[in-house]
Structure formats: C-alpha cells, structure tokens
Length: 251
Ligand SMILES: NC(=O)c1ccc[n+]([C@@H]2O[C@H](COP(=O)([O-])OP(=O)(O)OC[C@H]3O[C@@H](n4cnc5c(N)ncnc54)[C@H](OP(=O)(O)O)[C@@H]3O)[C@@H](O)[C@H]2O)c1
Image 1 (cartoon, helix red, strand yellow):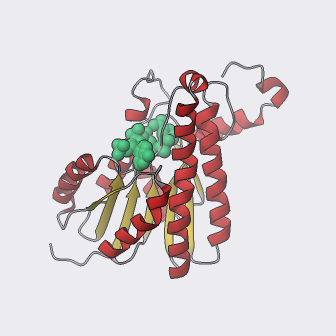
Image 2 (tube, helix red, strand yellow):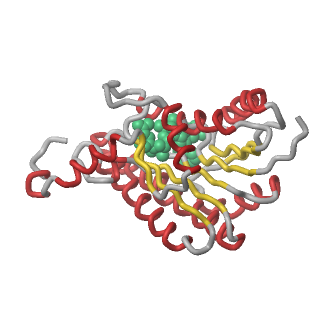
Image 3 (cartoon, protein in one colour):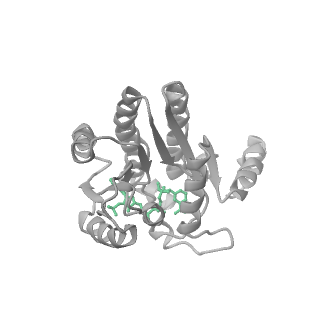
C-alpha cells in the first residue's frame, strides 16, 4: 500500500476511450498516473475508479486544453511540481468531424487541425525538451492509419494525423541519441466515443485490445506500430495503389 511509485506517467486526453483502457492496464501501486484533459469532472471519476484498481494512491488530475497552446509551458511546470519527474507521456487527445460537414464549415476543419496537429506539437515540444535535458523518457503519440493516404472521405482529419505522424518521426530522429524514445501508434477503426456514429463492421476493434497492443509496443521499444497489426498490410496495399488509379476510386 505504501510502496514507492517508481514511474510517473502523463496521459494527455485521458478521457478518451483508448486512454481510459490504457490507464486501467497501467494502474498499479508502482505507477503514478497524471490524467490530463478538458473535462476535469470526468477525470476525477476515472481517478477514483483507478485508485481502487491500482490499490495505492490514486492518479493526479490536471486540466489541459490542447487548443490553449499559450498555457502548455505552465501546464508542464504544474505536472512537474506535482510529481517531480516525468518518465512517460502518452498523447491520446484528438478531434474528428465528418468530412462533408468540415468541407462546409472551415471552423470544424480548423478545430481538427489545431487539436490533432498544432496542439499536439505544442505540448510535445515542451515534453521533448524536458526529457531531452533529463536524458531519458518515452513519448507515445497516437496518430492514425487515416494519415497514411489522403482519401476524399476523410482527408481533413487524415492530413492532421499525417502531420502528427511526420512530426513524431522527426522527433524520434532528433531524440534518438539522447536516451528519449518516441513511439508512433497508428490504430485502425476503434469502438470509442469518437466513432459512435459509425456503423461497426468487422474491422472495428475494442479499445482494450489497442491498450494491450500499445503496452506491448512500449515494452519492446518499437518505433511504429499499427494496431491491430493487420492494418500494416491493409495500409501497405492502400499506399501502393498508383495515384493515377487512386484518384478515381471512391474511398
Ligand atoms: N476511434 C478510432 O477509430 C481512432 C482510430 C485511429 C486513431 N484514433 C485517434 O486515437 C486517439 C484517441 O481516440 P479515441 O477514439 O479514444 O477518442 P475519444 O474517445 O473520442 O476521445 C478523444 C478525447 O480527446 C480529448 N480532446 C479533444 N479535444 C481536446 C482538447 N482541445 N484538449 C484536450 N483534450 C481534447 C477529449 O477530451 P475531453 O473529454 O476532456 O474533452 C476526448 O476525451 C485520438 O487522437 C484519435 O484521433 C482514433
């Protein structure tokens, strides 16, 4: 019960369906979780549940808004003042609006780009600078298979994730010699609040499966993982279709 916490783990966007599943897997007396997101009351509820599961002091809860980039420096200082050091940072937050709606209303497109790309880069640059200086740490960024190729049905969301994927790739390259590891996660379709209006077909996966896959990839210190792994092959095929053919497909 009084065992010392050995790892401090920050979860950005901790109210997300996938993040909740991951936090349940991580909860243990040795891990100090820091849950960050906009809806603090929701975070508090999760923290209580995790405290019971983890059989130790519960997670810390801190308000975080990806769109308020001017507050990100202060947010990280707040995290560090509460837990001292940071060993791992998971970035789960994200916004998805329908492509048709976002084509008609640029505010929706902008919200996706500002959250999924600009907000993510803003907070991760700060986390990366801290970990680089410390000479250790791990950053886990949740991107998407949607960023692998632009399609008419979701290119506004997809391009924000493509930007995140390339950002994480560059960050990994920058930090490779500093002792800081960067893992890019590309999930396929996952049954969470984000996809509540989508018809669930055979390709859909439960968030619990994704959480287990992420932790396996973290332990193996992978650079990039498609989850579930069959998406690696689906996306390989999709990426290999020549552009002259691809542009005529209805996808
Ligand atoms: N579901 C899928 O099929 C799928 C597939 C591939 C990739 N992904 C990606 O995987 C990640 C997790 O997705 P999910 O399906 O678990 O999503 P989700 O359940 O819809 O959760 C998304 C979370 O993002 C947070 N968020 C949105 N805007 C924010 C902001 N401005 N500041 C801080 N937090 C913000 C929300 O937090 P609050 O509740 O606190 O507002 C929400 O809980 C996302 O990045 C998503 O793009 C999802």
